[in-house]
Image 1: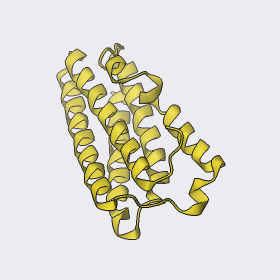
Image 2: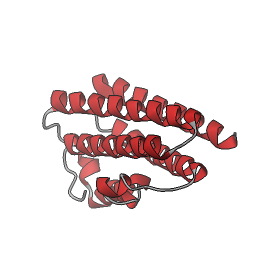
Image 3: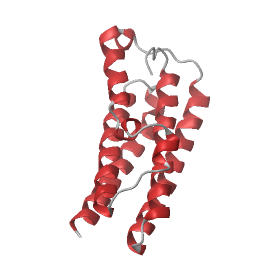
Image 4: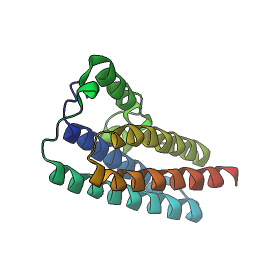
Length: 158
């Protein structure tokens, strides 16, 4: 993802994060025997779909908005690239690899928690790049990702 120079590029990255999350959660639905976990993973897959659509619409509204000058500095671009490269669902491989994820329910929940935490961090950074009138959409997604993390943590404790 090197060479992020427009706010819309960051929104495309957010859409990719949500797509990978949706694929990952659908994989967990397909491979989890416990009904309560399947229901939770199905809910989370739907949430990822909803967020992807929010970012798609935001992308369409923003067009080619330029990043602030400070955000184009090599050091900051490298930081954003690191956030993506180190994101749990990017480290697991491409979408096809995500479709093959296997793990115990505990490993699946722990991986999902890592995904949600990494996503929150990326969205917090993304919040800085969108115009003031659009920040509410990013903030709402951040709040929902936090609630997903709490939900997963509660399931892990069970």
